[in-house]
Length: 261
Image (cartoon, rainbow, N blue to C red):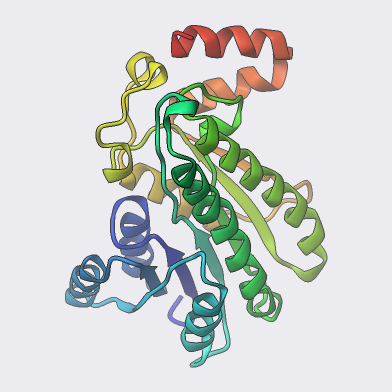
């Protein structure tokens, strides 16, 4: 895998960091990007000490120019971009009307436009790399709109739709596009988050759990009938399965019960 590359956003901590460490440990050339430069420096030291190869760089995912510059620099040695992992994201919880409008806008800008900008800028590199893949970090909150997480949930619904559309549109170019669906993960993003659903379901996943799921998916063989969505963790798998066979009113009642709404 020495010539294979993976470009990961939100890589300084949490799921992104765990994913970068796992790919580096498996021989990939890793591009780790974030706005947290101190976190990236410590990640680089950890990967380098273990004999891995990593490139780090500052990337505000809402800035298309930074996407363009970092992708060009990362792919320059080989021209390859085997895997793009759109992991960067933010979350704010609480009653919709109590969250400042600017905070709602920030979630949309980072979680939706940030991924969209990356996909747009990365397309030409993915298209020119045989068997390229995109992994979008979705969420179980995109199964049904979540009280106290309304806008975050909406951003993940948008990322779900974008994944589904591009999986069809980009398949003729040989690009595989998938979405990962974890429930709550023990990261800085969920520190202090207290909602009806976190109380009833808990925060049970670790960053490594999601990283291992991402890696496993990207190592799996492509199917004639592609699979697009991958739940992570037992709870998410159960909720996702129920959503496939339940009418909308049943899903609403289930979410109402889980969130105490």
